[in-house]
Length: 595
Image 1: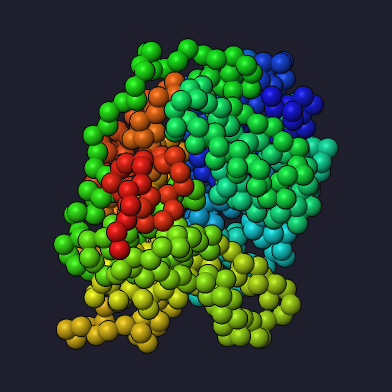
Image 2 (image 1 turned 180 degrees about the vertical axis):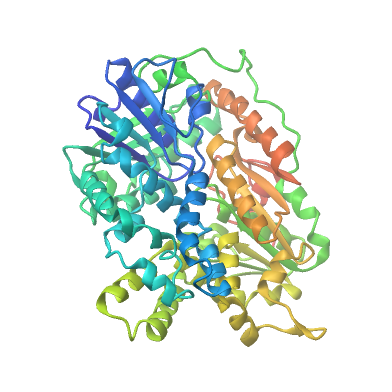
């Protein structure tokens, strides 16, 4: 079923956006290779790793045998612990040498996702270099690969420490990499191993969905530009209906076929494997072995023919809680692929249908918010978008003009690479939309895609946040009200955190919530999107999957969220006011929307 396992390379990397099944496929591949008599080391650096749950065996931060699978060892590099160790190594030499304000700025730079990724890469390069526990194994399987941005940073000259000391406000990712120069030789060898087709295969994991395939294509191109060309595509979760009379099943199969038929050219030319959708959670050795074979473990629904009944409010019911305020900022946040844009549009339509004045806007470059609303117009609803590429271009030019003019070529190259980072785009876009936050005093502003807590704190500590505010904000009662203050005010801002009823998206949403709370922001509610349980399927495979959702929904409701809403998986793409209103009300059939 997975062709790259027929004659596998020594190193196998699995990469893809959250929730596509990287961990499941990595674990299944490692188990199969071990079952065939190979000595295998399984390594995870995923911040939302659930290796232990998937294998149903203890996996710690030190390499140890998986007792239930002969020939298999595993290690779960704790990215937060790695980042903590890394921060300490970078910050300690600065203490008492640099001003306290500068150290504080660097500490916040070191609190974001870039540091976590780089610190994790710092840890697992020893395995990629064939050192320690990896020295004598036949195969090393990595759950999660480094991004192209991280790899480009590793290839640049080792001048990060001097740069960060001289430019504490001008970098978002060079702070994280400032401690790497001492092991630059190892990193160079690691990148060379990644580029060696004879030693390394990179598996791009996707689902048969347009957004996931687009993300896989982006990663493919970025890595190909770095001469990492031995790539394969694994399309996970391809559904084939068992009950042709179930309109939900028919729609799911049709939409998957359409997404695969319109696959980006960058992926269409790659060797491709498809993995059928399973009705059960991919947990335990039986499930993992069945993933790469034709075997099916026993169903997990105890023969249930109906999906579970889950009593949670719809998005419409959630909006009831703040609609009477008459104004406010509604920010919709979540990892890629969970349906932020659709939920934001459904909230905006629901408010507009109540007669409220609503601005629906986005900072997501791939959101196409106007497409979500469709060609129809609604009274009271205005749709706009900030062009993230233009905002980022202007921000980069401003930084290069103010900081890059007196740099030597090596330092300027470092700065230019830093300005290509995801953090830079997020900072630039947030600066562009910060001016609009005040309009929520007069109307509802629904924002698709919110900044992370790290971005907010980074802007605040560097001073750029308040300099921007001094030019644009209002003075109330003799004091400045900054955008961060607005976001921290639960009466003014309602943050909605969107997830899917699956293990990895829920873990990632939990991490986002922790990140926001560092910035003093508590989400108003979670929205569990694309729920099969809420859609009411009759196809036995989908009924089984609906039952598998229940533990994740229960965890959100009881452990993570102050309020929880449930949105169904829709047979038709929720585009246009009618379908968006149906989604908000928790029904799968769109009713006519009256102007």
